[in-house]
Length: 462
Ligand SMILES: *Cc1c(COP(=O)(O)O)cnc(C)c1O
Image (cartoon, rainbow, N blue to C red; front, side, top):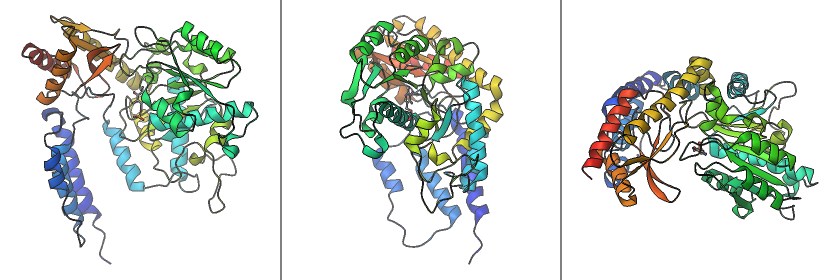
């Protein structure tokens, strides 16, 4: 057998990785090719014979490059993405290198203990109960799925129904109360779980998208006697607003409901002493879904499911098989807390990111993004005809041009085409808006100012 060419493959990849990272500040943020050209470059016939690793990696970098979106750029403000810090990226490389199947303590003691510690750090940092259970999953979508599976288990257990054994046919129906502005991943998780989206009653929200106390009280009254999950959000996907968690937990728990929190990015406000009041009461919920691949700036895919009821979490996810080696003592088998079986040790980059930034570094990262969002709002809002539509309480800014839907959408599209920065449009309370989200660790004031100048210049000529 030939010596494996680790050096050739990894050296080649390292060179391309560095070139990509160092090129981020200077390149257009959007992709620079067409679908047809990409298909042509990528879509060669399946090779009949092996190729040299170095050559394959070089070609891969070459064909992908024009189709890459520079989402790691400091001027990427689309969706809620976040980039990767150097430490998180390097730890992610090691995670791939070690290639641990980290479902069980037995298959990787190191991964198990690193995830155990990373989980405890996340609870500490976000002010969640230290007794809660944690699963490192692919993203908030699967974190919400995992948490709502735990909720389904617990509510039906209380109703005398073993859902893991009997399924949902014939089970008492579960009612879901969720803000009218909820993220689509809630509905998707309900589809996966067999609860279905018809189970949702939309709770009234205020002008920032926050669930109202009266709306929730009325919805809970209406659902009296049924098993109820209340799905809340901290960090509205458009406005960044926070549901009033203290009031919600009081009302919902008095009615015996389970409270789930979608905190994909907003939950990280808890990591900042200055912003923590925004999430007051969030620690009293029953489950929380959040991302590390957004504001913590860890590479994809990295979400975190947290459950205040570890027994329910484990009842919903746990698995046993004769050929596996299950924990018999105090060890932590991750597959009892996640939907996957074989799994990447995705908690390792989270551990490294938390270790690198520390408590103060994470607070600065979150507060820094919020200050830059306010800078966007102040500078854009000062221009003629530009209106900031939301209270900029976090990292999200919604902007509208001359009160005109079509014009606002045209400007959003032209800004993306021009390439200085990347952002998207949305509809906010029936009106078109430009949506700016600041979550990248590397964004600075110069990035914001350059982007504001490009946006205003495009607006002036549109
Ligand atoms: C991003 C996001 C999600 C989905 O998270 P994924 O990590 O993409 O699965 C859910 N809710 C909110 C508020 C989000 O911002």
